[in-house]
Image (cartoon, rainbow, N blue to C red; front, side, top):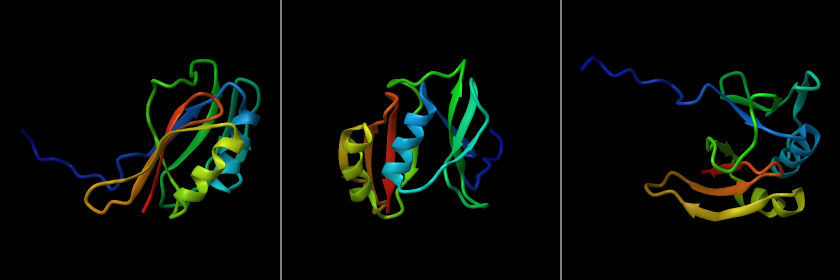
Length: 127
């Protein structure tokens, strides 16, 4: 085997599909406490998660070929030390906590899993 390349980040970009972009944007803005920038309309609309120039970015997408679901890709969103606060806002934003705050072994913080307003299974992480 050849040499193994170590990348700075395992993720470069992520997209979370939605049926109703307004509803999904409202859900994530409420639970994460951060506004999302919107772009496009109709079947190519997107709402972008706030991210710095050196961090991993992602968006909500409304596209014909992408549909939300519970069995799809699992993305973990950063909660910046406020996992308890984010989890407390999930039910009022239209989501469901599937797995409560759980310690990651080895001192790597905490995670939880939720179902968003669109039916996606999404992970949350915080140190």
